[in-house]
Length: 149
Image (cartoon, rainbow, N blue to C red; front, side, top):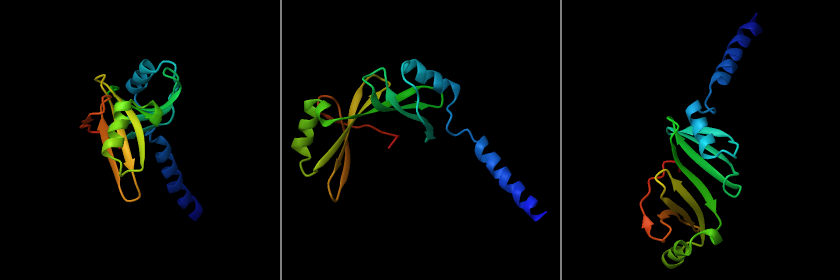
């Protein structure tokens, strides 16, 4: 009888855990993804801060690894595309070289926004400090509120 009484709450917890649909986006989000990336297959979905996020191989654009973000209504808010330093526009790398020489390492991500304007997120690192700056393709620093960091 004791085993039975202990088993019931355990099974109930398992049922609750599996009934949570936290990693499956609403149909509107799935349809928006398929419309924007018709050749790509979505990867693992996650939901945080009111945003549905999915990392996948973008077969529509050079098979690169990207992370797309959608709001709960299915609106595509932005896409983060990691970039190799050699693929970043020269004005962006020049700005980093001229103004952030104290940082030995920089990682670049292009953020394609819903309004059509892209920005480059530059994560600068050295032993003691980390800094993130945003630049347009002309290398001009710009403000950007990245809710996915």
